[in-house]
Length: 66
Image 1 (cartoon, helix red, strand yellow):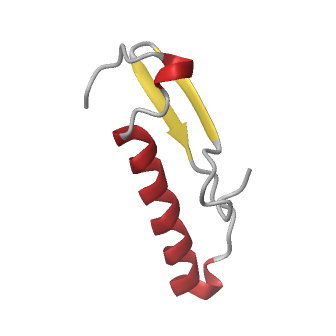
Image 2 (cartoon, helix red, strand yellow; image 1 turned 90 degrees about the vertical axis):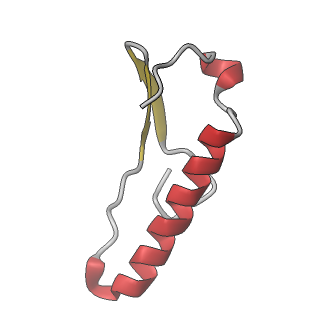
């Protein structure tokens, strides 16, 4: 997975009562506007994943809210 695969969760896991999602950003900042657009779309998709509880089937829903 890569940051440019904006529709994919790159890494996900459980630590204690926390669900952790990871974005691996290896892009160069030379093209800052493009880089920020990619990150914004990726983060927005992560938020949809969380808000829609798409993790529920694999990880349940017993997490602390932060």
